[in-house]
Structures are given as structure tokens and as C-alpha cells.
Image 1 (tube, rainbow, N blue to C red):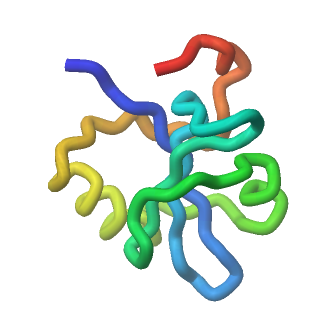
Image 2 (image 1 turned 90 degrees about the vertical axis):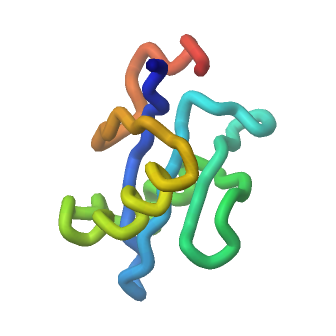
Length: 87
């Protein structure tokens, strides 16, 4: 079973965003997911600059939601250096 690399980050208001840094959506942008709005496109660097790492208890609900819709996740704290290798 293939795992999808995900980075969970927390906005200042406490909302959590899941970034999929190895899934390119357009130059410099990756797939993302939030409870509100669900899938979208995010500028990885912009989100990283404006958020904090989400702790396991902070991202547990979003992780469960992603797994419920079919994702098998590989959780990372940042984009892998070898990110030229895409999923």
C-alpha cells in the first residue's frame, strides 16, 4: 500500500492544514486539505512561513478524516529534501 507524505501545520487561529508536498498542483504549489474547504492548492513556503507545526493531538481529527476518505499517511515535519521524487 502506497503512503502519501503529509505535513500537518497549525494556523494562528488553531485550524490545522494538511500539506501534501510531493503532490504538485502547479509550480511552487502543492495539494492541501482542511476541514473547511477540504482539498485545495497551497503555496507550501507561504503556509510554512505563516503556521506552526501541529502537534499530534492537534492534527488527530484531520488525520482521522483523511484516513476515512482513503489516505494512508506518512507524517513528516517538513518536505523531504528529495522532494523532486513525486508521488
